[in-house]
Length: 106
Image (cartoon, rainbow, N blue to C red; front, top):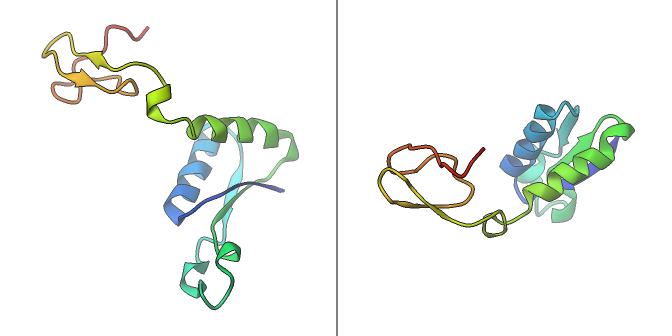
């Protein structure tokens, strides 16, 4: 097993673990119940961690996690809805206002 991610909070650790599981990478979250002892133990030892169970999947897991860290603004340009002309973020596949599909998506 190898640690591939240390999160600032429990929710993010579980999000990363679930993302890896969606890519068929077996992972576990450790230290997800230590937040209550932070202060009595050094904080950096209480942070939740995501560990990959098989060494063969470590590099792939790290690539997936790096993609997760890309800010939305770097993913592409905003688009205008073809139905209601509302401006939508590049990460949206559907218009947030009317749920119309973005024509630019293949």
